[in-house]
Image (tube, rainbow, N blue to C red; front, top):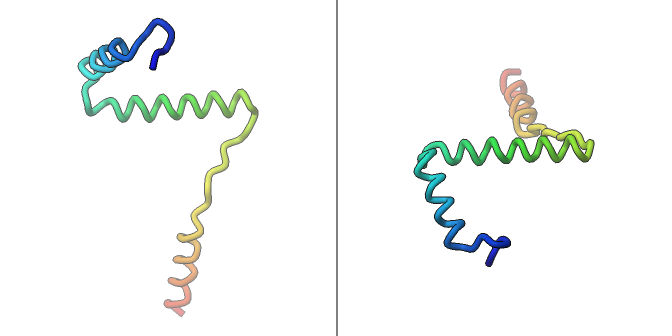
Amino acid sequence: MGFGPIGLPQILIILLIVLLIFGAKRLPEIGSSLGKGIRSFKSSVTGEEEVKPTTVQSETTEASNENKQN
């Protein structure tokens, strides 16, 4: 498994250095923000708008609460 001139040992060393620099607590935050940035870039390039799912469960819960009050 190689990525051009970079092999597996070099990738492991790079990951270890990143872990030492940022720490274990910040790595999930960095990964999350990187993923959001990539998604944003992809949607801006393709022209697609991000569709946020609606919560059907909260609407049905509100309706059942109204029925209980009546």
